[in-house]
Image 1 (spheres, rainbow, N blue to C red):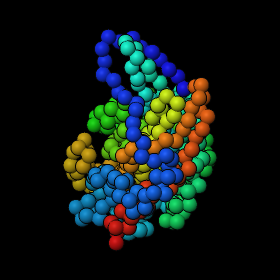
Image 2: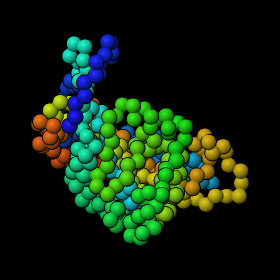
Image 3: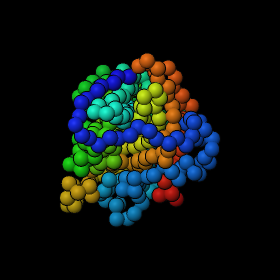
Length: 309
């Protein structure tokens, strides 16, 4: 952890002192029923599958599905990352500011991944799908080069605006070992969906790609988990027709890649998950985080099944 002091004459202070509702993530998932947790997971309403006849030509951000056979069978986990808000406090004419270092963020993201990956794989398997990690989907030199260096995701003007908001409020971002970082601010953007769901998914030879982003906040000697966002992208299941589609710049045109589903869970009260002493992380407790991600998948597949019922 690092601390920087900046002299200021006047400023707006963002307080790091917040009320805490639960003592741990485990306590949160124990106290709240599955139904309540899933209710708190808010789907991005513009980024969901549809069986509406108006979308049968394949236009729009979400896929046109009419059968469970269209659900993705192989899904690549392409990013698993954290972002840290950091903390600010005042001392007369000084502001003290701090957050995790990039190396510390990588350590935290990797620990979170280790806590959740088994449950993620098990839950996808229960729905008839297979979740692949980079050591599994990067099975050729060409795929490895494309994923690690050659691929550049696109983003619309609105997506860039949302990404910039995330960047301004976040001090550091870091990915788990072996993963690239794709920001979650633009996770629901239609251009981001086109590049992840079209270009990347097709190049990797999978039916869909999954992104997981977790927001934390360091506050002096401890840290809390603030939010979780998950998004799934994949190829458009409907071939482009020989017709004129609406303007593709509006998010309602035809796109080779689409967002299959996406959702966010903002915790009403931040939940403690880490302890730090003398600029070192001395304790990390992410027990229960796997249950939260499991409920994301239940929410996703509940929507999938509702669409094609």
